[in-house]
Length: 85
Image (cartoon, rainbow, N blue to C red; front, side, top):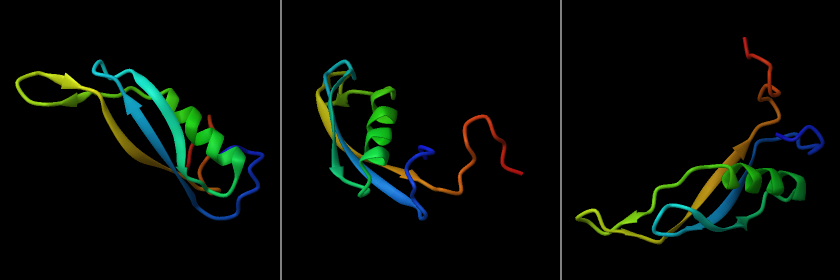
């Protein structure tokens, strides 16, 4: 979770994505907000850094596809570089 988000509970962000027939990201947008613009932008950033597979019509024919992914954040998660014991 971004350190400046000031969120005290677990939150999720729905991110709608569209990929082309090569699996490259065409678009990503918030479909279900966490209520915090900072958290929503962090979820978009994570999704934009992700790799995707294209849709598959069978027989190896790839097609554009779309989906909604939910990115969850917890204020109790370790910060980057910290290990949870």
